[in-house]
Figure 1 (cartoon, rainbow, N blue to C red):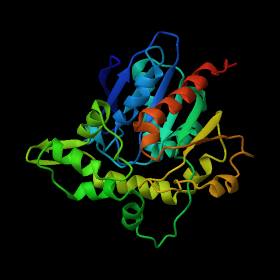
Figure 2 (figure 1 turned 120 degrees about the horizontal axis):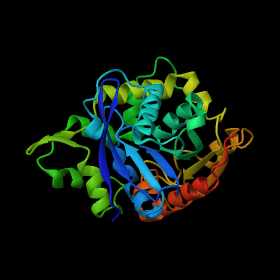
Figure 3 (figure 1 turned 90 degrees about the vertical axis):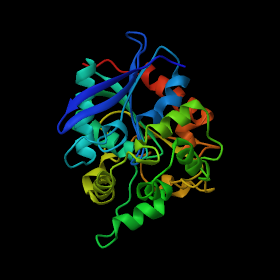
Figure 4 (figure 1 turned 135 degrees about the vertical axis):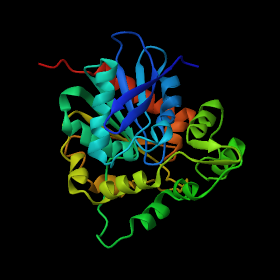
Amino acid sequence: MREYEDLGVEVAGGRLAVRRWPGTPGAGVVLGVHGIASNGLAWAEVAEALGADIELIAPDLRGRGRSRDVAGPTSMARHAADLLAVLDHCGIGQAVLAGHSMGGFVGCVAARLDPERWTELVLVDGGLGFPVPPETDIDAVLRAVIGPAMAKLDREFADRAAYHSFWAAHPAFHQLGGPVVAAYLDRDLSGQEPSLRSACRAEAIREDAEDELRNPEVFAAIHQPAVPTRLLWAERGLGNEPVGLYAPEVIEASGLAAAGVALHFVPDVNHYSVLLGASGARTVAAHLADAVRRTPTRG
């Protein structure tokens, strides 16, 4: 497994926890942004697939993982500002920005916030949004879309094995395993046995969902790409449904191709295994390596 280091980056409200897999100086840097109820180790399988040369940096977003206690309200713009703080802390001028699921929305907003810091944006099954009516209950939407990721917030787990078993029963996780996935799940736990709970703060998830689902500027960001952008969309869904988060007809009707977004279908993966599974991680890593190679010279 690749060598790594864990960093603490000062941001408004506290210290952001960041996992960094160093690379060869000058070989390129990728910053990976995880989903709404996830953590930075969601990118660990991709880090392995990238090999030792390209550096990968993956923060736990505020309110998740080891950044659980970073205080203050949260939104796509707040996360985007935190990403710039991570670059500054690491002394990195430019990087390829990658975002999975909600991390894709963060990435789109971050690219518009400061396009000079990002050479390309790689969206992984995320970033393309659809507004919900004002009267819609956000918790109901979250339960319907991410299911167990919300259910975990209301439960206690006697030990780590119990939490691993909880996810092993998820239809999109049943073929995922190994030490990388185990470490990812462990990072989502806080407290002590026999009263372990998810490290995700419910209020942070709700605040981000409100912004992701109701903010017109967030919806618009992907349609007005500030840097070269590509979207990788998974064949299957969050519950391993045959149709993914983005059905083919949704992609076709999105207008993204006309906006200049490169579209790439990823077969035989679901919303989770596109990042956490070996095959999906290899595909994502290949796109990231290609984005690093294409890094333009800024005038």
